[in-house]
Image 1 (spheres, rainbow, N blue to C red):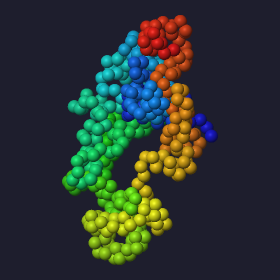
Image 2: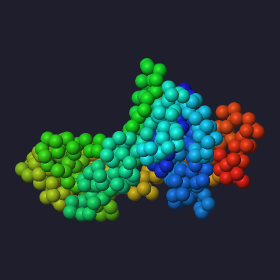
Image 3: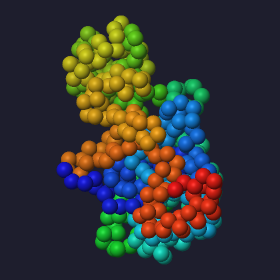
Image 4: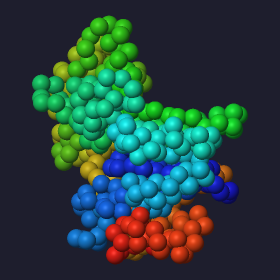
Length: 406
């Protein structure tokens, strides 16, 4: 097998919390050398987020997961010498990722207009709440706020209940994935043109883009989509059902799977019921159908129904909690749960990458780094002499002078 697909690419990541770091994580897994440039006074804000692996004084578990395979450079970008070092790095980099509020990098003198004249091949990716332009550009863009503004919360949860957000920061994560995809597209374009470009990705547009089914339906009909719980917007039965000890999920919207479900439930008469003859009729009578199905599924365990429905060819699954998921036999067989080394903590349990490439493998080298862990190594690569490095440390470029990072 060859090297990871993005081997040889250098990425500078300036990010906090989720969107920028998750974008960097995708690229690092694919083999890019991602240098996480962090404020020496605390670094990425997520470093302070509990729980902490290793107990109090340890490392944030979330940070370790979001920043695997990266190197950490502690650098004060507000210090003139720190800015100069970053410019030196950017001249040699392929990609810069930042997820600060628009204007922050310009205030530092490190935005696209400052960096790309020095390195025309540089790809500069900004991920922000609402994008770099428009009337909302300077608003803070937290995932919760975006889920509300984008309409995601209006279609999530149970009908008649208070608004609910998606259980993961889906706006952050979607923006990160769009950004990683855009960066790789820009790298391909650079092969043709020899030039880099600027990328502008927003959480707001990423979240709305995920509503492709709902927005297209509204455009076609004028009907405003509503929350459906676990049900499908156009098909039935397709939702979670209670069992004797939990829940199962099943989807039987095609003629074949609907017939198979009726047989597995020992209710072949349902297939002949005119209320449920077609998918459209089943959707129109969804509440009555769900009551009938759930009265039956409540009689046995989730495992019983999973095995019975699977044998009948009905798409189904057990609704698992996170502790069950991370011990799932299928994930274990595919090596998705693994232990990664971390310099302070030893081995750290982690999820892997969902990307499987046959010729250029994913890289899974280490968990997230400690703050400034690779500062000295990166300075060596830049060719900074020892005397100059010591002077920079005394000036506080890498942290407080009494505790230089190198």
